[in-house]
Image 1 (cartoon, rainbow, N blue to C red):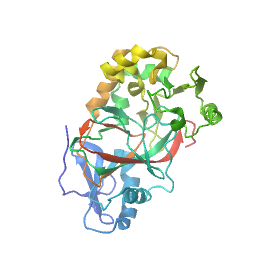
Image 2: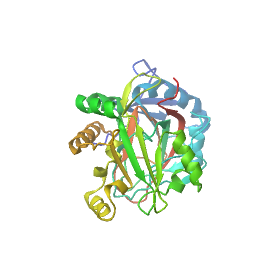
Image 3: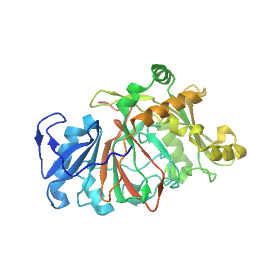
Image 4: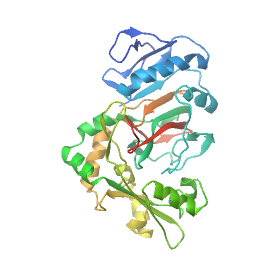
Length: 344
């Protein structure tokens, strides 16, 4: 279901406080039955820089509770404007390293969203939850909305954890998840692009430093295995979130025709990516189906408008993509790297 929103809304002093406006901006939930996301809009036309302090204040107040903000109607008309606006929230963006999907760098640390074919659905997930270090904040900018579809559905990762059947939670917490990746060979992103280097020694050092098992295959390509968390605790709110990409990495996520074509030419061990339990045992198909159903039941989506910026707490909110037609441009920026071993 797509929730649309009118132009009239009121800002909140905190999530449940009295109504007020702040710095020329006002905010309200996208839909009355959901706290994710809050929509922040201007009450009067001003230069973009005039909204920076108020936007940062709203993020500080609302993001830990609602998990996501949709800034709509601000004068953000280019990748440069987007990067400037994001600068209100962070002094330093991060590069897309050890990425799992194809992207292009637009400028400095601003990237295209995942460059998968338009017909392809991208399941809800938290950015880089397949690693032991991830960005705490992620922003999406709509340079051009698709003619049809192309939504970026989101879901509350706390609710995903709460609604996950107890037997699945317990099994994943006990065993964790192993992600297996085979790079290049025309089937997936080359290791040179993933690790931003042509030097195998740099790759080996990165893998050692990050607890990633690696091996160079006979054809010179790379295979990695990493065991990572299934859940995580948010460092600020103390809440537990469902935080992994098992359902996305697993071979069952591929369209049946694609899966059959791949398995006709490579063994399961040589698939571009796959996921299993941390001990190497297979994740049951029915378990993955239940996980996907939990995400589906919690998904909230809206139609992008040109100039929109969505800011997510990457641990509190998962995101995905629906298929689309026509040209679509969504740019992405990330900040605040954090991992399971990062001190609070």
